[in-house]
Each structure stands twice: as C-alpha cells, then as structure tokens.
Figure (cartoon, rainbow, N blue to C red):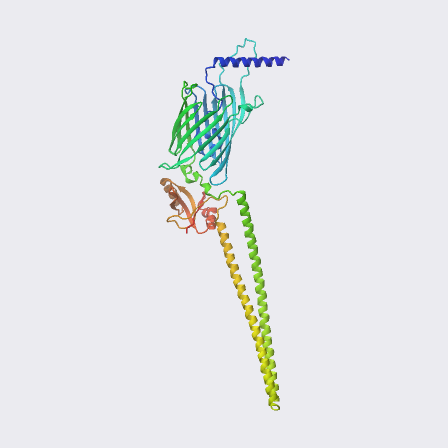
Length: 556
C-alpha cells in the first residue's frame, strides 16, 4: 500500500510539473522530436533513408553535417553527424557514423551503423533495402527546473539511459523515378528501463517521391531532381515538404520548403575533385516561428577514392549493360532450350550410328552381290565349254542335231545374259541407295554445322556474372571482341593511363565511341568470345593484374 501511495504521489507530481511547464513555456514553439534531416539531398542522405547510402552518399567518402536550429553556434538545439560510407560491391554499401543531437528536451550522443542492398530486376528497375542501427545515451538537455530538496516531495529520476534504435527503409527506382519509405524509430529499446523507448503511436514515418531529369550541358552527369516528401510525427501535424536539387560534379544548388520549418536555400562546390563544401540557411515563414532566427546547416565531405573511379563511365551503372537477371518464365525457357539442344544432340548421335550401320549393311550386300555375279559368270563359262566339246564330237554324226543344240546354247546364253543384266540393274539400284546414304550424310553434316554455329552463338552470349557491352557497329572500329581496361571521358586521365600501360610493357590501343565520345582503352582484339574470355581470365597472360571486361563490335 505504501508503494502504491508513493507511486500515486510521483504521478501527481509529474502531472503538476507538466502543467507548470506548459504554463511557463506556453509561448515557446514545441520542436518536433525528429532528426530534422529534411534538407539532406547530397551527402549524408542515408540519415533520411538508409537505402540512399547506395548512391547519394557518394561512397567511398567521409562526410560531416551540422544544423543550428534558430540559434547561434553556441546555442541549442543542434544536430551533428559525422559519417563514413563505403561501397562493398555493385549492389551493397555500408557505413558508420557518430551523431549528437539536442532536441530541446533530451541530449542524445552515440553512433550509427548503416547497411543497404539493391536488387536489380532488369536494366531500368531496382529495389533497395537499408537499415540504420542507432546506439546512444540519452539525458535531459534542460535541467533549469530544480525541485527544492527541503520540500518532502518525491524526486524525478535523472535520465541517463542507453537506447538502441532501428530505422529501416526501402526504395523502388524505375528509370529516373524513385519512391522511398523509412521510419526513424520503428524498433527501439531502453536498456535502463528494460522496455520499449517509444510507444506504438510515437513512431515517425517518412515517404519521398522524386524524379531525376538528366541535363545536357558542358558539365557531364548533371541532373535536376525535384522531390516531394511527407513526415508523420507523434503529437504534431504532418510535415509536408518539397525540395529541388540541381547537381553537377563541380557544384550543386538546392531550394526547399517545409510547412513547419519554412524555406531553405543552399548550395556547395567540389574542389580538386575530392573536397566538397556546402551551406544552407532556413527561414521560418509560418506565424508561429517567423520571429525565430534563421536555422543554419554546414556540410563537408572528402572523397577517398580516385577521381577516375568517381567519374568513370562505370560509375553510372554500366553494370546494367551486362546480361540482365532472367525472370522465372525466361529461366524456364532457357531450361527448355537446353533440354531441346540435348535431345537434338542425342538424336544426331543416334542418326550417325544408324547411318554407319546402314552403310556397313549395304557394303556387305554389294560384296555378296558381286560374289554371286562372279560365281554365275563362272558357271555360265563352264557350261559353254562342255557344250562346245559335245557339239564338236557330234558334228560329224549329225549336223542337224548340232545345229539344234547350238541354237539351244544360244538361247541359254541369252538367258544367262538376261540374268547378268538383271543382277547389274540390281547393283545399280543398290548404288543409288549408296548415293542416297551419302546425301543423308551430307545433310547430317550440315545439321551438325548448324548446331555448332548455334553452340558458338550461345558461347558468345555474356554470362550472368560477366561484365559485357556490345554495339551493332561503330565507325572506324573493326568488328570483334575487345578486352577493355578502362573508359575515360577526360583526355588528361586517358593520356596518363595510356603512358602508364606503355611503361609497364603493354601495347594499349583505344577507340572513341558512344553518345558522349568516351575513350575506350583496350589491351587486345579477338575474333571470338572464347579468346577474349581466355585473355581476360588469364590477366592477359599475367601481364595486367587489374580488372578488365569485354566490349563487342558486331559489324554487318
């Protein structure tokens, strides 16, 4: 009973303090409890949606962002975020960050781990997943109200909690259109209280719709990106905002509006192709905050890779030019095609065996026929000799009888000739059969050549995990398979790369093609895909250890 009474006293005291605070600070604008990251459109965009670390964080880079809300540098509330992002492979990226935020009520200090993974359905459609895992300590940011220890009232607990918070996100991209959804605190746990840190009704959700419009100008890779977003906040009206970004590889500018925070104008530039610096100012426009001072944001980023890696053609998703991922129906068609080819190969083998058996049987028949013919001719000659002897002995006795017998011999000779002629006709028919067999063999050889041609065409097709590009024809380029070492859009880096390969004892060549006239540097040209793969897989016989890929010019 005493415990229940004390608990009721603390609840009543907390209620009175909340009423007192609302009366004293009722004129102050209540600041939402979110991270206030709605202006992050370039670096550190993974704080808005963890899936953005795949491309909008420009991996591999270290980036810094800070925001001073309505205050000067030494005042609060402020936010600070220092992030490192790295691309793991063509489909995933990861990062780690330190963050510090003053919400006006709590002061949060801790770290963030980020991971994102993308699934490419085809050359134009991608689904990306991401998650931010926050771990931070939370304490009261404003301790100006202190209860008199002489008054016998229960004291409020001093907050110094450790909180683990998970923020998942997802993004669907089709060509330049992108739709993303994320939550800042979908799952969280307070280890000091051994319970969830926020109720189900206190979850923060964000949705964004944007489209990238490529812009043709002197600066390569320039684009214009308008974005529309909606944020739901506990106990607050929904935030609706729009943001437009104009971006090139040397500079960017942005203009945005949030129905709570107001209008934001910012921009930045990239120096030495590595260091990026930017700033933004946000001005309140609503009646509740138009008397507040402007909010300021500053960002800085440093790109850790080489400039060629940052601006090479491969950075703009040339991986999508590789063999696309097959759907279930396409996989079934491929399997049926493979089974059909196997059945055709088995049928060709059986046909070849049957043809060989027929050839042997016909050869045996021909030999037997020739032997029978020789035997018949020998029999005819033997009978003729005997008849001539008998006729010579009987000639003196009876000329008429001899003439009759001679006539019988002539008739029998005609019969024998007829038999020989019939056997010869039979032999000719068998010879025709042999000719037909030869024709069948030629047709089988032709079919085999067609199957080998189909097999060669299949061998020329790129594999699922193989980087490959092809064009039907290119002016001044001989058809064939080229082993590409690198692609450049800048003459300075192209010439430096060619000199470096020549210094290593290689004999590089290049050609210019594509709508943007990029220089393709190749180490060799081959007539077949197999020769090109052999050169690629053997690292050009051990002469070039770096990564290469295959570019095919089909020709007429």
